[in-house]
Image (cartoon, rainbow, N blue to C red):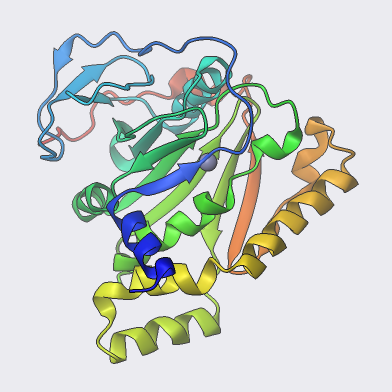
Length: 279
Ligand SMILES: [Zn+2]
């Protein structure tokens, strides 16, 4: 097994989503009023504790879940959390149920690990999910607001099992104190052909590792960094104009940018009263 392959295998155990810049400005503590033991959303060997708001959880004894919190208000909470947190955190959001599941592990200033197998179990159960992670702190340099290349590459580890299953959608979003950046895979003919070939050669179970190796080359990392640099030189690194760089493409990835609108009136109606019960 070559060094690259060993590295890929370790990624499968825990996809590392990295932050590129400085630490936060204050301590984020939990955020939620964790008063309830929630029904088991997914059996992960840890109890799920139900809270009222999204927060960082660095304890390994349990995971957090927030019910009846829909996308726009949830994103606003993550934006605020990003501005005070000192470590990254990751969540799965189930749009249909307005349900949030905290899934991050080994949270640090610059990375948070997620277990692709846990995300797969959640996706198989709910079909359409969004994987969020926060980039905490005010960035000294605007490059800190962009996903790291490893964020983009994690798509291969997390989505590979479902490339041929149109019923399951896993989207990826990074939230900072100023924005939401959604990153996705451009499923080009070349990429589709490569996936098909891997399946035909009996390497289906190793698709994620193979694609990761194929698409995490130094050239592709450099191309992405160059695209970010071009954006920063065009916007004079003024973070209020970063949106002008998007959509941004760096094969095989595409990035889209959104401001979080604090004045969005939809927030007041953004709760769910009668969603399906969680089982
Ligand atoms: Zn990241």
